[in-house]
Length: 408
Image 1 (cartoon, rainbow, N blue to C red):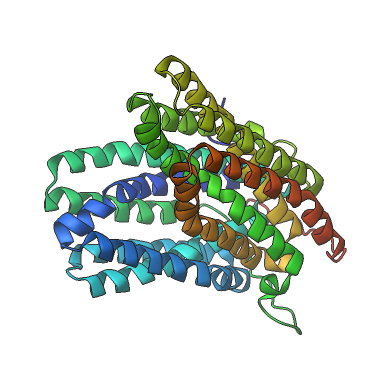
Image 2 (cartoon, rainbow, N blue to C red):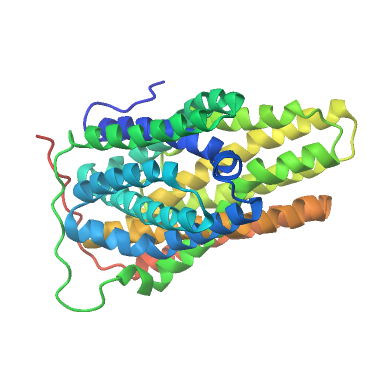
């Protein structure tokens, strides 16, 4: 099975993403320790700063996508990557909470621009029937890149010195620069003129699309099951050994890398994507039941139940991701792919903001009943997606899809 797609725009995007996410993996791994042990911030200050920057990223997501449509997505993404390199380098000079907030806000805006431009770039450079497949490749290589970055960051964590942390930050900075250079191989995607009348940010007025975005964002809370709730559940409420936490995370990463592209088949059209979302909700509900069953039973029973739950969960994760791409591309007008992809990203950001409180309160605080309530919630959310997508499809104007930009 190939990790990279066939030569062309999709492969160029995948290579750029792979390089950039190696650096992202190093930063995600060492950021908390760098900010507390080297900069001298408190844990509370780090938490407040990350929450505020997440809010900035959410608010600017759709406007940045709009800029990608108007200015051209390739140019905006390259500019955003270069800006991210500069802002990342500026972290080295941070010595206070105020400085962290300033740099963090700038990084959040640049990150929003990168995400919005990426969606518009895929829509403009890749044929319509290959867009979801391309996003699947990008997600697979993202997991590889972050994993490699995490391993590299381990050397810095072992050294636990400012020099080590600064070296990793500069490595992250370098990956932004190289990723931007790789994108120069893509042909420019011309900007799309703004409509001559009506509102500019039409994605924020598209009620059916926003309804889907909210549903999808709430569904995305399941990512925190494997990253937050399950580790706490295993460590504090089961007889399973602690190493099972790493095993469950490894199962998730390996399955995404190997099978995300295959799982995206059939989600290129709205009907197929809606069905995939419904399947995802049902499968994640089963995973929640398996996690719940792993509590309070002998270790020989708990381990296979929890590993089985992790495997079932990642199947739902694959379908959920592919469904979201197919629906977000399929509902977006040709002249507003960037802002629609930005608006779609807002749902994921919303989910990531509320998920830690929801999943820890229910799964860890309430125990088995909480796990079952979460499963029921995901089941309902997945079941609501197909009718919402049908509602949204009925409101789309019948405009032919423009051809992809030729590769020259």
